[in-house]
Amino acid sequence: MTTITIHDEKELKAISAIALESHKALRASNPWLPERSIKDFFVRLEWMVNEGMVYATEDNSVIQSFLGWFQLEDFRNVGPGALTPDWAIGVAGALSAKETAIRISPLIRNLLTDIRNAGLSIHGIGIPDSSRILMEEFSLLSWGKIVLDAARSTRDLLDGLMDNAHTDSLPDTSINIRPALLSDASSLAHLDEQLAAHIAAPPVLMPNTEGSTTDEWASWIDSPNNLTFVAEENHSLVGFIKSGPPQMDVSWFVHSEQTTAICGLWVNPECRGKHLGESLLTELAKIAANRGYSLTSVDCETHNPEARSFWLSHFIPVSWSFERRF
Ligand SMILES: CC(C)(COP(=O)(O)OP(=O)(O)OC[C@H]1O[C@@H](n2cnc3c(N)ncnc32)[C@H](O)[C@@H]1OP(=O)(O)O)[C@@H](O)C(=O)NCCC(=O)NCCS
Image (tube, rainbow, N blue to C red; front, side, top):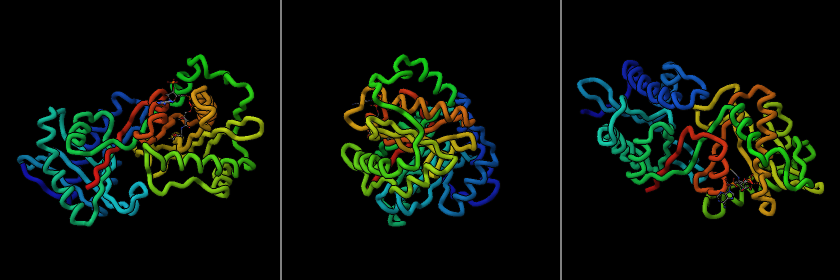
């Protein structure tokens, strides 16, 4: 087995085929995910060859595995880092853990050597939920989980929420859930500050977090592609949920015109545990279904336990991101 750096079209086609095979395995258990073609992978991997590095192992001139990365200017608010998105890793065939390790470890050696030589000391990688053996391999090699990307068909999400006995009516009837108005922008900026502080505090400990300003909230609410609901008690906001078109930090596997990606949820501490989060999610799912968003996605820090538990109760994992610092 030899290790090569991907350069030409033939090699790119070979690794795109491995990426597509891996994606088919992911879609086999999650058929509501948008379909991807070999060309979709080719275009992305070609970009990575030009902007970063892509390595592969080959046996008798047949490519068996590949791994790519590129440099991010700001990795999760800590500065420059290297990133391998969930579409930029793959091992051909359904292999055992041992066979997978044999095919992936030379690529990881190259990756860490080149990252270190580039002056970087942090690497993040997304791994599809269907690639359990790869996840275990990275875990054993000292990478730890940081982010969960999850999704669900909006119809299934809504059916699940409606089946849930406590979602139709809030226990505390003084709380009203309604779409956000422009006049909510300043109160939302205040709640968002608390959400940012929550992400900055233990156990997440994300550095340099900040919420959106009043002006940013006003333009967010104004955009027809965004959905925002607030929970109000005695004319004061106690929670919100928002979603919009998936951004760059959301797994590409969920990106489509029909996807709405949840990118914020907050419930004031004194109101938690009373299904207010669920009620906000229910209202969002109802309007998402009405507006034709057939897929709803979310991403969250895995080291945010309440959020992780909340999202895993309603969504299905698509990809897990890991990071290693050295
Ligand atoms: C996540 C959050 C919105 C949930 O709001 P909520 O109104 O308490 O949610 P609900 O009452 O509808 O559901 C509670 C669920 O949260 C999870 N949860 C609540 N407290 C938890 C805890 N201490 N540990 C683990 N999970 C917990 C559980 O899944 C629980 O469901 P269950 O009661 O059926 O087990 C709220 O905890 C919050 O605002 N957290 C801080 C902000 C945040 O992390 N936002 C998400 C960003 S991705």
